[in-house]
Image (cartoon, rainbow, N blue to C red; front, side):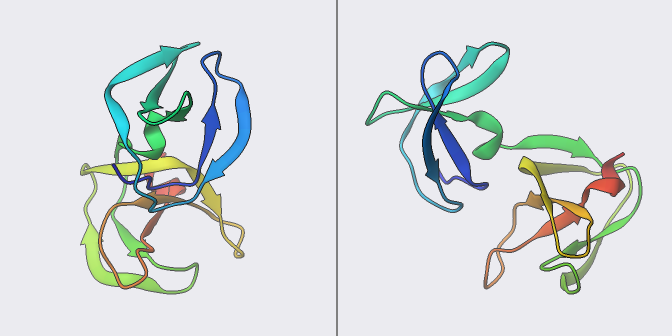
Length: 123
Protein backbone atom coordinates (compact mmCIF):
# COMPACT_ATOMS: atom_id res chain seq x y z
CA UNK A 1 0.00 0.00 0.00
CA UNK A 2 1.08 3.59 -0.51
CA UNK A 3 1.53 5.99 2.41
CA UNK A 4 -0.32 9.19 1.46
CA UNK A 5 0.74 11.34 4.46
CA UNK A 6 4.08 11.32 6.28
CA UNK A 7 3.74 8.67 8.99
CA UNK A 8 5.43 7.94 12.30
CA UNK A 9 6.03 4.34 13.30
CA UNK A 10 4.55 3.08 16.57
CA UNK A 11 5.09 0.03 18.79
CA UNK A 12 2.40 -2.38 20.04
CA UNK A 13 1.55 0.03 22.92
CA UNK A 14 0.97 3.03 20.65
CA UNK A 15 4.24 4.74 21.61
CA UNK A 16 6.32 6.38 18.88
CA UNK A 17 9.47 4.57 17.75
CA UNK A 18 10.99 7.85 16.56
CA UNK A 19 11.08 6.75 12.91
CA UNK A 20 9.21 8.43 10.10
CA UNK A 21 8.18 7.22 6.64
CA UNK A 22 7.66 9.85 3.96
CA UNK A 23 4.65 10.35 1.72
CA UNK A 24 4.14 8.15 -1.36
CA UNK A 25 6.34 5.35 -0.04
CA UNK A 26 5.18 1.82 -0.80
CA UNK A 27 4.92 -0.43 2.28
CA UNK A 28 3.64 -3.94 2.86
CA UNK A 29 1.09 -4.13 5.65
CA UNK A 30 -1.20 -6.79 7.07
CA UNK A 31 -4.72 -6.38 5.69
CA UNK A 32 -6.47 -6.38 9.07
CA UNK A 33 -6.59 -3.25 11.23
CA UNK A 34 -5.30 -3.29 14.81
CA UNK A 35 -6.88 -1.01 17.43
CA UNK A 36 -4.56 0.40 20.10
CA UNK A 37 -6.05 2.82 22.66
CA UNK A 38 -9.00 3.59 20.35
CA UNK A 39 -6.83 4.41 17.31
CA UNK A 40 -6.64 2.13 14.28
CA UNK A 41 -3.27 1.05 12.91
CA UNK A 42 -1.88 -1.17 10.17
CA UNK A 43 0.91 -3.55 11.20
CA UNK A 44 3.92 -3.61 8.90
CA UNK A 45 4.45 -7.09 7.45
CA UNK A 46 8.25 -7.03 7.53
CA UNK A 47 8.81 -5.72 11.07
CA UNK A 48 7.16 -5.19 14.47
CA UNK A 49 5.89 -1.65 13.89
CA UNK A 50 2.54 0.04 13.23
CA UNK A 51 1.35 2.98 11.09
CA UNK A 52 -1.86 4.94 11.70
CA UNK A 53 -4.56 3.82 9.28
CA UNK A 54 -5.57 7.37 8.28
CA UNK A 55 -2.12 7.89 6.73
CA UNK A 56 -2.72 4.99 4.33
CA UNK A 57 -6.43 4.40 3.77
CA UNK A 58 -7.66 7.89 4.67
CA UNK A 59 -10.91 9.12 6.14
CA UNK A 60 -14.07 10.18 4.32
CA UNK A 61 -15.20 13.74 5.04
CA UNK A 62 -18.27 15.54 3.70
CA UNK A 63 -17.80 18.97 2.12
CA UNK A 64 -19.88 21.73 3.71
CA UNK A 65 -19.34 24.13 0.77
CA UNK A 66 -18.07 24.09 -2.80
CA UNK A 67 -14.29 24.11 -3.05
CA UNK A 68 -11.31 23.90 -5.36
CA UNK A 69 -8.35 21.53 -5.21
CA UNK A 70 -5.00 23.26 -4.62
CA UNK A 71 -1.41 22.30 -5.41
CA UNK A 72 0.12 25.09 -3.29
CA UNK A 73 -1.25 27.89 -1.14
CA UNK A 74 -1.50 30.10 -4.25
CA UNK A 75 -2.09 27.72 -7.16
CA UNK A 76 -4.96 25.39 -7.96
CA UNK A 77 -4.14 21.84 -8.99
CA UNK A 78 -6.84 21.94 -11.67
CA UNK A 79 -10.05 23.78 -12.42
CA UNK A 80 -12.56 21.22 -11.19
CA UNK A 81 -14.97 22.28 -8.48
CA UNK A 82 -15.80 19.82 -5.71
CA UNK A 83 -19.45 20.26 -4.83
CA UNK A 84 -21.04 20.67 -1.40
CA UNK A 85 -22.27 17.37 0.07
CA UNK A 86 -19.61 15.28 -1.71
CA UNK A 87 -17.61 12.82 0.40
CA UNK A 88 -13.87 13.28 -0.12
CA UNK A 89 -11.14 10.97 1.24
CA UNK A 90 -8.51 12.91 3.19
CA UNK A 91 -5.24 11.48 4.47
CA UNK A 92 -3.62 12.06 7.87
CA UNK A 93 -3.72 15.37 9.72
CA UNK A 94 -3.86 18.81 8.19
CA UNK A 95 -0.92 20.78 6.83
CA UNK A 96 -0.38 24.47 7.60
CA UNK A 97 0.81 26.37 4.52
CA UNK A 98 2.79 29.64 4.40
CA UNK A 99 -0.43 31.63 4.01
CA UNK A 100 -1.50 30.48 7.50
CA UNK A 101 -4.39 28.30 6.27
CA UNK A 102 -4.79 24.58 6.92
CA UNK A 103 -5.23 21.98 4.16
CA UNK A 104 -5.94 18.23 3.99
CA UNK A 105 -4.16 16.07 1.44
CA UNK A 106 -6.57 14.36 -0.98
CA UNK A 107 -5.99 11.62 -3.54
CA UNK A 108 -5.43 12.26 -7.19
CA UNK A 109 -2.67 12.20 -9.73
CA UNK A 110 -0.82 15.31 -10.82
CA UNK A 111 2.77 15.73 -11.94
CA UNK A 112 3.90 16.36 -8.36
CA UNK A 113 1.09 14.46 -6.52
CA UNK A 114 0.22 17.66 -4.66
CA UNK A 115 -3.54 17.94 -4.14
CA UNK A 116 -5.03 19.69 -1.13
CA UNK A 117 -8.43 20.98 0.02
CA UNK A 118 -8.90 23.68 2.64
CA UNK A 119 -9.91 22.36 6.08
CA UNK A 120 -12.45 25.17 6.52
CA UNK A 121 -14.53 23.65 3.69
CA UNK A 122 -15.23 20.57 5.82
CA UNK A 123 -16.34 22.41 9.00
